[in-house]
Length: 208
Image (cartoon, rainbow, N blue to C red):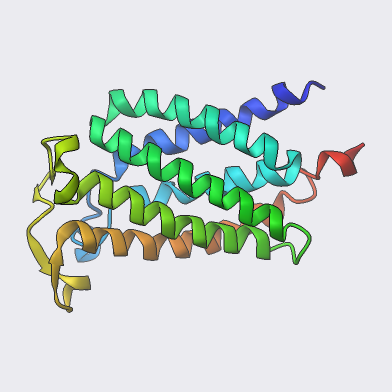
């Protein structure tokens, strides 16, 4: 089967995950009093690392970079329509940097224990993604990218207690740290579907 054709499901999955996350990150997770430290996007975005790592395992880093680039372009178009231009720009920048870093780390660790490459690459990539995305999307220093600096319930610049109990920080900082904490937990959870698919998505060299 043509390898290009077999990669397209991964491309489509990547574009859908990123576009959905770009929309959901604009809405706070208001349940259990977490509206000031968490957005819905934290629950969906880690799936992008799962897609990337499975592509890397199956086809190698070159194909994974292809999926990232094509998925990035598709997601940017969708995000520009479904989210604000600033969100689209921030997401695109963070996505490229984090996913390319994920590919490099995964490839370096692919011959170690089965869980080490996806776990470490996802955790490091998530940290970079969170830092870049929330800074570009919501920090006042980058407000020239867009005039909207608010979620549905108010400005992202007003101070709130960190995690509800700490020193006051801008709301976007609290949201970034909360999102990153959830990304870590979901990154760990993504080891379950990754491990379950190891036998199905064997490296193509081994499948021949």
